[in-house]
Structures are given as structure tokens and as C-alpha cells.
Length: 189
Image (cartoon, rainbow, N blue to C red; front, side, top):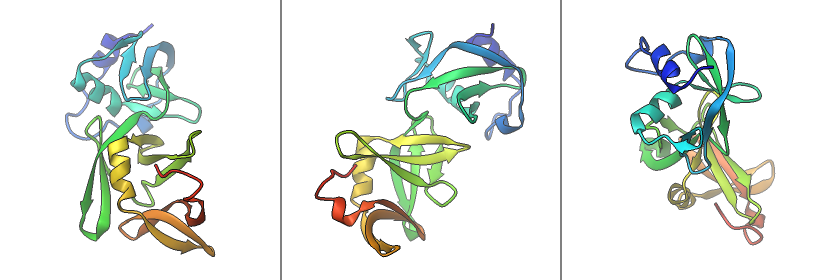
């Protein structure tokens, strides 16, 4: 059964820049070794938080979303990762020319909202919305409350298929949050 040291050792030859090609790797599945990403973005190994940011960033770089699970993948092994909500948190928002919305994650990835990296808004039981941005390969980042509040400041209304919707633009792409007539019934994100 692999552990964190065997996973780290398997990446010894990984390139220093860019993300490893985890989508090309198809090693044997080695099971559950107790890796978990909590809803607040904390990574755990056998119920102990992983306190080294560099190790978390390394593991995040080899995280992959398969059809029914999240896994850490090396060229020689694959292990399960339990993800409570989203594997990443969007912790910073930057707005560039053309109103392009770029998000920095808690593992130092940057992604710009676009049709290839959409924003999505999930309803909460409290009536509000939880916003997410697609980082890569089926891996989403949940926006922190502070980033979500910045996003709310950028909302606009637009007619979509005959219905007025509240949402945000990133470049030319519009990402609807909710119908404008539902604002009185719901809290924004």
C-alpha cells in the first residue's frame, strides 16, 4: 500500500515548471490511503492536516477528477482523495482589461473565467448561492466569501431567452447567477 513518501518519490523526475500530464497517466489504482480535502481547503493525510504548503501544491498538481472520484496520480500509482466540496478555493480576484475575471487558488493556480473555465452557482440551503470556477480538468475552486462579495459588486442584468438574469461578465462571456425576479426571495452569494 502506498503512502505519501512513495507518492512523492514517484514524482522525483517530474518537471519543475508546468503541470504534470496526469491525463495521460493510467497507473494501477492502489486504494484509499486516507487523503482528504476539507470544505475549507485543508488537506489531510490520515486525519492529520498537511501543514507544508509546498507539499499541498505538489499534490494539487497531480490531482485528477475521474468520472466518479478524485485521485492523486503518478506515473506508477493512483490513490483516492476524498473531496468534501471542491478541491480548491478561489482566494483572490483580479480584473484585467476587458473585464476578464482571474482567480488565484489556495494552491497558487490562476484561472480566468471563460467558456472553457466557467463560473457556476449552486443553491445553498439558506437560500444563497455558492459560486465556483473551473480550474482545470473537472477540478473546481469554490470562491471564498471575500471573493464572492467582490464578484457580487460586478453583477449586471442581461436578458437571456426572454428572462432577465443577474450575473457577471468575464470578457465577452456572461455567467448567469439567478433570475432577476428571484433576488427578493434569495440572498446573493
